[in-house]
Image 1: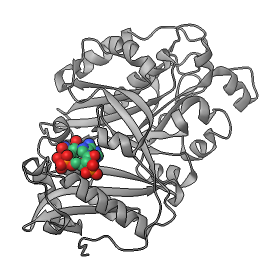
Image 2 (image 1 turned 180 degrees about the vertical axis):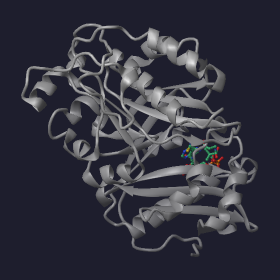
Image 3 (image 1 turned 180 degrees about the horizontal axis):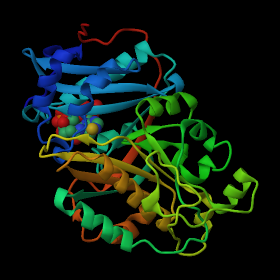
Length: 375
Ligand SMILES: CC(C)(COP(=O)(O)OP(=O)(O)OC[C@H]1O[C@@H](n2cnc3c(N)ncnc32)[C@H](O)[C@@H]1OP(=O)(O)O)[C@@H](O)C(=O)NCCC(=O)NCCS
């Protein structure tokens, strides 16, 4: 197959009118749970994002985008795809170069770009980017008629006493903003001090937390008991709370009567545990299937199980009647075996095994990108 040159393609800012064209090149991507069809129009409205399409003879053949993050000093590349019939001809390289050139020209303060990829990225990528971190990806499918039973099975696999952690609590955003300057240490929980939320690797700076609030990302947190003492200034810690009785707004009252558990003291246990979720959304697979991404931070297996069960219960409450869930868990590699055991008997969903975070330093450019870009 002949490689295409930059001059043979038009690269333009994507518009609402390109939606169908982008959909047409996206068929089958990510095993049918692609996020772009659902996010496309919201992404277009985001002032921090630029989206690009490459066109050949008026037809969309590739898509890419960047989002400026970290208060304007970094960007994340997201959504790259090339039409199946155009792959292997260098198109990905061309649109990525254009995206990067535009980023460097329009945002001279951006000095780093990050992206996430599944396992085995092409060697040329690894030459350009430095590897930051890798997490285990564990996708499962909960069909509509098995949801209730699946939750029961998971509940039965949660140990019944907890030494180190009070029950997890959903944080409001004033608590989120204080989280890492108080009870939890960023360096303990976040690899490279990065949150990775639904494949987006970003720092915990205020601007990013504000973005996540806009996207309605929910923070579920298990404080270690000693941190609870520090927060409340009291020795009375609510050790026993039922995850099934967490209220709609995510808070759990001290009167709640449920038990959560741990597997015994470990140095990791005292560091706390955090998980992030954004609202589920319908995916191209159709048939009422919704995608739920759960990003887990921390290394305590019991906490991870408790968080997953609670978040699944919350998701089921929000699911339209007859809907089913493709749930993708992202966890530290050390939790893979334990979580795979926990989820045993649920239907695995084939997607990928790993989530890699890559980063590259960039410098600003002074001349516009060489191919055409029309508004
Ligand atoms: C991955 C994909 C975009 C590659 O497109 P392609 O046009 O066939 O890629 P080519 O091999 O012809 O282009 C090679 C260039 O793209 C880069 N590339 C290839 N795969 C890539 C990937 N997954 N992520 C980023 N860059 C990639 C190569 O490093 C190379 O860059 P260079 O020319 O600067 O060296 C395409 O196969 C695709 O759309 N796959 C489905 C969606 C997907 O997996 N997207 C990527 C993850 S979001």
